[in-house]
Amino acid sequence: MNVRTIAGLARDGGVGVETVRFYQRRGLLPTPDRWSRDGAGAGVRRYGEEDVRRLRFIRSAQTAGFTLEQIKELLSLDAGEDRTRARVLAAERLEALDRTISDLETARAALRRLASACAANDSGPCPIISAFQGEKV
Image 1 (cartoon, rainbow, N blue to C red):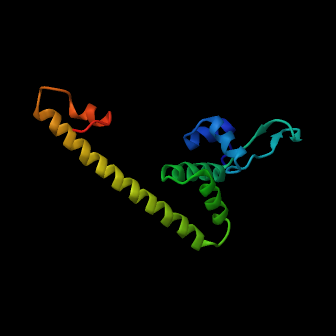
Image 2 (spheres, helix red, strand yellow):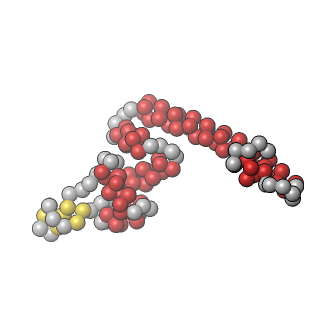
């Protein structure tokens, strides 16, 4: 079994130590007991592979746009059998991502038009700047 300190967990999970502690305070990661040669209650906390897996899941779920509350719910669902709720959460997230992608594609098209208009004429103010200042172009 590969055990690590909080610094090792953070490194293997691609986050900082304070991020690990934040996730622990939010109930997303367990806080193990301290252990030393003298027994529990003193010494260093030790983390295993399951902790790394859980930390990586949290980071991946955040990248997909899930909130910390949704991630907490997904983690609790992982321990149970409620696949229906997990599918609902995933479908809701997909819908939100599709809306965001659509909005970004619209913004990209508008910016391309503005950049083209800016390149077409070397005189006067740039329409990109005017557009972002709320002026008509």
